[in-house]
Length: 151
Image (cartoon, rainbow, N blue to C red; front, side):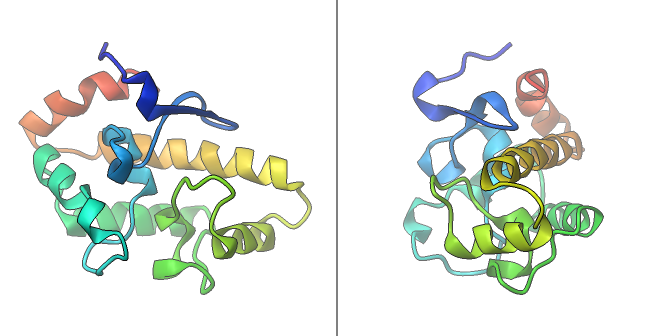
């Protein structure tokens, strides 16, 4: 088991305890689930550690994109409203991005916002696990193993 930095964790509905803060805020490998699509310039690009983390665990940007886009199709998360055309690229931001929340309400119109966010974070946790399980690089596998044990 890995020591988790308590300042870099949040308790959110659907993920429950110990959800990582986004990578750009110092989150662990599991936080790749909240990262944007590689290949685009970002407003806060100077803080972005996504590409550095992907290299560290031996996952190419193309593999990362494929995982997120397959997950999006499997979960009906494709959306013209959100950045990069998929809710799978949306972040954790408290009070969310208005476009993310609008896209989620479109997907789950019969749920309360509280239930929608619970489902969103539950699915983000599933996506996080898929990302970490997909690592083939032996050093990368070793790096993420303690985090996989948290699921």
